[in-house]
Image (cartoon, rainbow, N blue to C red; front, side, top):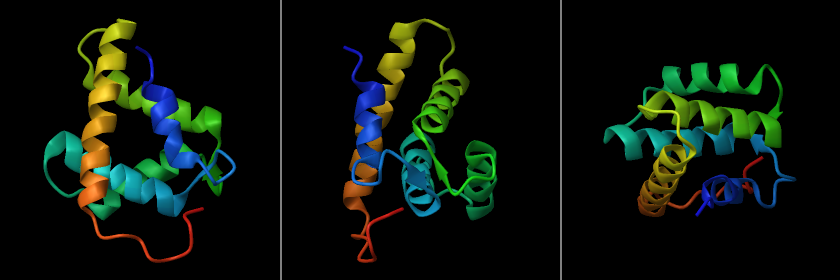
Length: 111
């Protein structure tokens, strides 16, 4: 099944299908933990945000898809769609587990 990208887009629900910096940092930090088993360096997250956002206040659908595709492209050995889908499904599941274990964000909804 190819539910990876739609599943990951759930992170943008309620935000006009846009991922602002705060949501990006929370999500990216969880992806980092899911993939590497350790907390991300804040400087790495900021550097990734700057590269992925292209100086904009938020990632739109296209920017978000490109960032997710790049993640899969870096982590997958091959270039087959099935491998990317499997990686993204596994990463989505692992990331959701990390996010579920984090303290709730009591601030306003992420922008």
